[in-house]
Length: 370
Picture 1 (cartoon, rainbow, N blue to C red):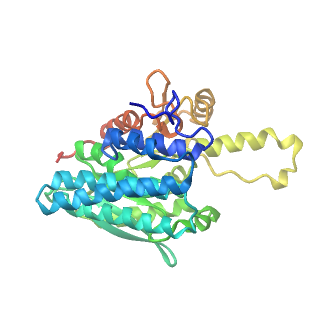
Picture 2: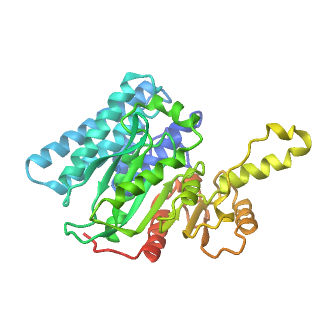
Picture 3: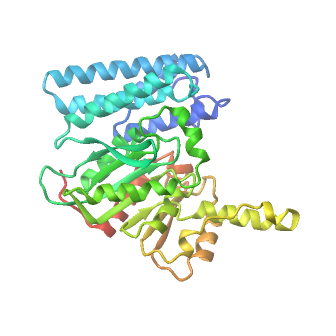
């Protein structure tokens, strides 16, 4: 039975876009093992409107239930069930933290619990995953999860998965790892937080050189004997900005990239250009060089939904005007008729990720699935 609090389009709280979007994310996570639909609907019935405390309390309680179930299964030697429950617990802890202020101590407690579930999941895998630290800024390092493709020592094609500033890497463990594993890829899941709390986001957003993180990541992967360094790709999950696209310009060692291709920078450039006649040109920001108009050799896939922030016709025009004869930039638009049409494919990420990883497999080649 569908809870009365849900509208016909599955919007949980029409007055709270953030909570409704998070609930949709949780429902779609069920497709990849990050939740169960029954548990999500159960919580929806228990919530008291758009109250943040109710939201935190109910999702945290559900996370703890799944975490305990994982520990019991692990103690009894049922590793598959333990891994599944740790993934769900991890995701539910992340959901509990979502509406809380970054300064709220409960948010940091939930993040730490989420990370502990991720570590337990990594350790229970075969082959086991690793928590890795990669130097970046003075006094701040990146933290990632490396998941090897197989138990052998043969170097495997590897995919770097990184989100926008503010996005934590734990979601990739259920959202993207299955697609990588099925194609024999190793995967490095990253975020920009390192070991910092969520209020570190303000410092990240003030930086103009986020793309400088990627060369250091490539330096790290080059040291690993289990990575086929000639076959390393990158996925920018969500692409709310173009920092990964800018990194591709600086990093010739990448063999394939899934990102916005500089579309957001191009969109901003066109917006500012349209206002030149009404503005003081001296105060107009200088845009970054768009990837599609560059000489980068890296093949690029751009995916977007036709109902997202940047309209499909506008994206097609930007790609057409900026490719300058390049044939290695591909734009895939997901329509409402096939789903995956929302911003960041939030309505059906599984469909988009199948397409993305098939494209990566065609560029990087596959490895030996585990």
